[in-house]
Image 1 (cartoon, rainbow, N blue to C red):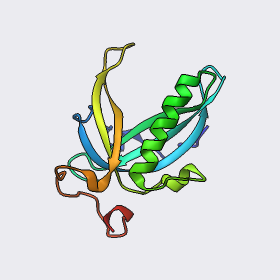
Image 2 (tube, rainbow, N blue to C red):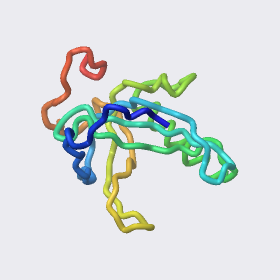
Image 3 (spheres, rainbow, N blue to C red):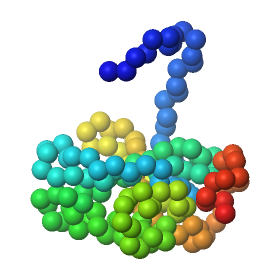
Length: 152
């Protein structure tokens, strides 16, 4: 449990509901990564947090789960291929830790899909490419600060 002593929701505006971002290509960086157990407990997946760093949707987060440790060999193969695409898009072909992939710009290919269980729309990352492979520039950066590694 966390101590919330001193917090008063009466003094803070509630967060707005976030709608999915439109399908498209966005410049992003991985800001966090963590191995987590699968719901069934028979394996583990690598969860990557991508943060969009430019344009209208700067600072929005998207998550990718890679089933790198799973009894289903097909799921592992798909995850390994996706991890290969991510590594190539950030220029780290032989990472020793998932943190080696953090804060390096790449282009994520995002689509909107409908959830099977609830029918709600959600975002899904369907591909990756190098930052310099963007065919059309995305809107001007809204990221503040000059120490951002993707701006170098």
